[in-house]
Length: 611
Image 1 (cartoon, rainbow, N blue to C red):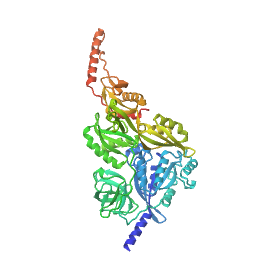
Image 2 (image 1 turned 90 degrees about the vertical axis):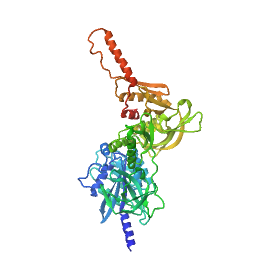
Image 3 (image 1 turned 60 degrees about the vertical axis):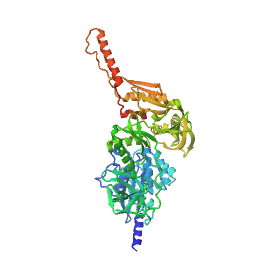
């Protein structure tokens, strides 16, 4: 009878759990709506409330964007029953879409938020497809209905066209005023299905996030799919095979709430005193040592980095500290990939993969803020394959432009191509097509999904996407275009290595592999940009772009010059000439022995060549 009672208790608990996330395009009001839900369920007090309550990083509040998914548990009573609501607020920017895919894996339902003034945008569609692939129950929500510019009727029609639902299924609310939020809460309880799992099966818990706590080690956040986890259990992480004791488990309120047991379907955290970042992998399965599960849960698909760049410590002695900082940061951001590399100019560092330029910028800023690491970031690039004349069948992998063999013995260079899929409004077809053709893209197909939405598929080099493609795509499409890609293989191209020489010294961190048609133009722009950003010295600084021994562009930063003839009042001209000649000789000697410090802003300048 005891066992039956506990099974009944488990079912009752599972039946009353609702796991859901909030998905939307950037700036459609997800975090504000989450604030209202927390208030209505009395999860936080008015004293604890602040704008974007769940966004706990300063950088998120400063920029007004969500960078990290944030899980929080709420309790709400309806019709005499208490419900446990696990909410995950997700980012809206395309660069953080991996955060969204991981959050979706821990949920059974999703609130699809659409701004009543801006209507459906790129990430709305992209995130919706992610949710549908995972069989989530979608609840469409029209937000910001209090805005004077809101157009609820027209936007509701857009949502109905996209989802194929009835107009009355679209909930209307305002995250700012709280209007309609209570009805939304009741709809979540009624429509989002309870989690499915076997309480009596061996423990299987999916890790969907983790964070480094300097005092307690690594905290892993998980969803219990089958079985249950108790405080003090001996657990095993299946991907690494490591075993630990569950020193503390609990649920994720605004502050962590310690519990004795976390049951099937619930979301919680575990602290096991793990110090090594490599021992916890997002997407791993936790099971019990005594009664292990037969197999791990399918984790998440491997992340596809879009942009590669080198990150180096300013001081070479900080290399190990930087490694430790990046490992800890990767716990919190699983879309970051890295491997060790070295540079002649910058010493030892890491080649990192990012999902986009904003992602790169945020990682760099987080390293500086959270770990006090001042770093230098090199020009973003992709990996190439080179073949030599003497052995045209053996590929040489080129991660860095400085690794490219000399051109005289080179047979060919192949670069990675991608199949790029762009969905945009029909108004922007011309401008998007012009941009892609400028980036050496070849149109493969064009398909009208609806009267106003077009999907265009291009075959284009990945290297052209790295620089400023995202930013320009968003500009030409007014933020409406969504972009996805899949690798389509390697293809031989006429690529040349453009070296940047500052004061006759090659700076390998600024070297780039560029298509021969664009080399002169980009070399000229890089020299011009560096001339504006490198501070003036006591001597002339020549900045040159070169392909091999051939100089293709040059700019000069003029010297700071003291007026040495100021003290000559009248007198013979030869006196002035003698002073000027002496100054000129000093400047020449200075230039021979002088070293030019390249500021961090100059390394990043090449990313914004079209500004």
